[in-house]
Length: 101
Image (cartoon, rainbow, N blue to C red):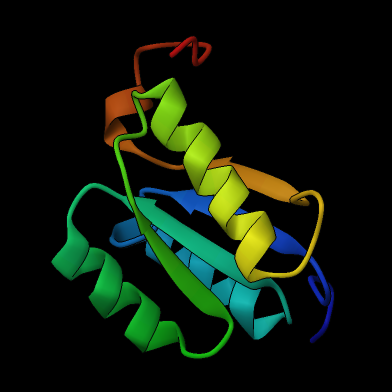
């Protein structure tokens, strides 16, 4: 499958559970995935489980600055000027509504 071929996808909460499952699916479909989570060991393990189509970023999804840096890192690592998708899959965002930083 190549429905995500050439896409740069940022997945918050991508080191565990549904976020990790989504990251695996995006990468299997040809996408370049950047996993964002606040635990370096979990991020490293998730990236290793996906392989070459994944990169990690350690940051707090509740921080506007961290999220801006994560998106910039994704664009820089995957050779683009923009990202194709941002999947916000993190429990800290469950009741917050819109992300305001």
